[in-house]
Length: 355
Image (cartoon, rainbow, N blue to C red):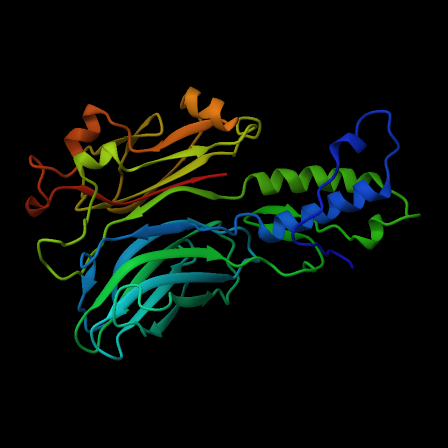
């Protein structure tokens, strides 16, 4: 079928496409399907995953109130269905939980909410919300917000997960958009037996690979929790000095990142109480200056050194991703000498997106 794919894909045998061998329909059609499969499913994994301890994250807001926010990647302009899974319970019937997607440049928002069923922690099911992007959005990053609304009592959040739903087979005809980049679906019938193999297939394949390599992949994502019930177990609103020892990810950054100019790592830092002056954060081998209250974004080239032991064990290029344990970060993060009650500038959200 035109522009179709199979899942899981049947991979091309690399030993059949080496120099000197006859180029067969079998390998070419598999490669075409793999391109379609990669565009449809690439990046459709968790873009956010965060959890809280027992009785920690509770809110009793009686109107629709935002609790957390993350910056997340969007696979392509055609990926319009976002699945948001929230494990939570409520103390009174009618309490709701919801999710909202916001596209910063267009300003458009899309949301969904659901009445909570569980009355105890991990009672039966995740609340599954489907957020549909019904407008035409061209941004490759957006923001995900968790909100609740209580009729009475409280809602307790245990953990959240979210991912984009893959595109179904066959893909839409015509050139497809991933931000401002293009992808040309491969017509599988055109790659069948006794059909001419045009140079166009090779050109489109190289362009498609270049486009897909830029697709965002969450390396680290954390949000503080706000509008909660005060108490000794209240969840963290911002990143503290002791978090430097714990709050990082060991991730693989794939070979070839330096071969294309815009294969960057995108860092999003959400700050509170900033108005002016110098507030700098050491992250990913850079010292980044905050310029505004709220979200600040940066595109960074790969500068870190590999973690030799991890790279050897996993046979991949492995890196530590998160805030760096520097004296600068120790000075600006929340702690005994920089308490949140004194209204300092602090980091309330951090998202790091690779490719």
